[in-house]
Image: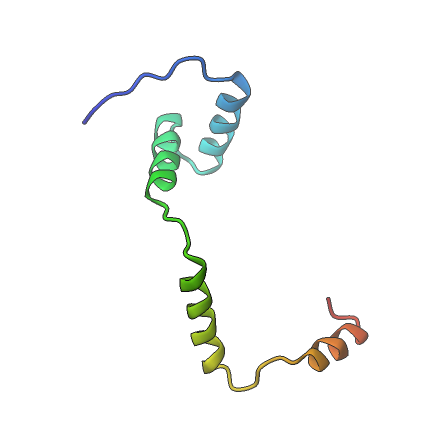
Length: 79
């Protein structure tokens, strides 16, 4: 595996990474690798694809929520 050296990392960033690593029970190195991997491998969402998926889910719902349903829920104290 390759090695990489980083320079001039702001101390507050290092502290945030250390805290995050401790919370996740990872080493600092593992936390950095985890975050780099998640960042590099994440893909940008295509708005049309997202809308198509939402429409497909909406078609499977037997009782869609209407504006009246929302008004009634709010008037009953539901957020």
